[in-house]
Length: 358
Image (cartoon, rainbow, N blue to C red; front, side, top):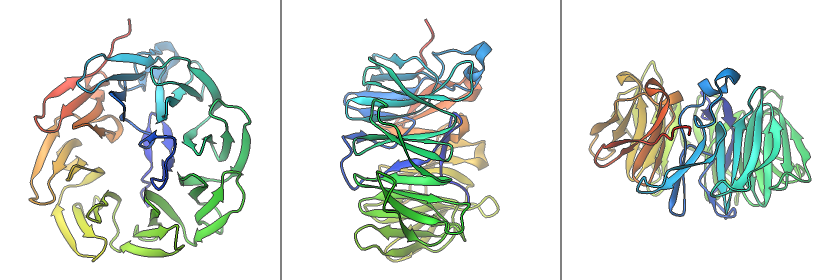
């Protein structure tokens, strides 16, 4: 199975947030570009070169924010950020440690003030949920206060994906006889096996957890209220994007048999929309966006209604990563000194967002 876990600056972002309940106004999932209030938050270019101690540049890879019109750009966390999440009036970050291996988990205000180091990890990811900060360091999951106090181990497992609500952690893991989809409370107790086969959480929506089977990459849905699983897409795809309003799953086919297929999850009706070798599918405002490996790895837009395709930018994003927010596509261009850019989806006007080190 191709893992649908986002890799950004070398840190595996295994955690996702269930949308079924409020989480102190968490803004999206741990991500690339996030919007909070009047500001857009983004990463100031690629941090890969900066991870080397001899060339460590806090401006490259720093967390920035700007007004939605692109004005008032500023560095707010001058560290090489690998992941971040906004919850209420706080930002939680994972940054690369200078002169050493590993990462620092930190917390600060929305303007970057009052930054505090919470803990350090060798690898892993973070998630704020239910008033706690959860940190996955290797195969150990910790729970602690948002300020890093009362740190405790809640499980030791090779977790491959996870989603949270206000009461439970839903997770998958491999390497055990009884691999599958599980649920545990925030104390790491009352563990229940929900799905009895190897799988991976793809998306959560309301009370539903969408997961992909290891055998054949089929897509199923587990409902938290009924405790039942139902098959949704029976054709194997490498990855998915979702239009939940119309219950459409957009699936990317394999390199050997490329294409994007729309499947009605209520009726099972399918339609092939294009034959591009696509990766990193996203659905935004009625359109499908993807990395087109048949055209140098550029970002494309696909209209599901007409089948029309549009090249959004003739640039290859770093690690095939990009974000979409407020009518713009955000990405980092490694062939342009790893600078960050955004492209207006309507006009295709491109704007550089990089901030130089003073």
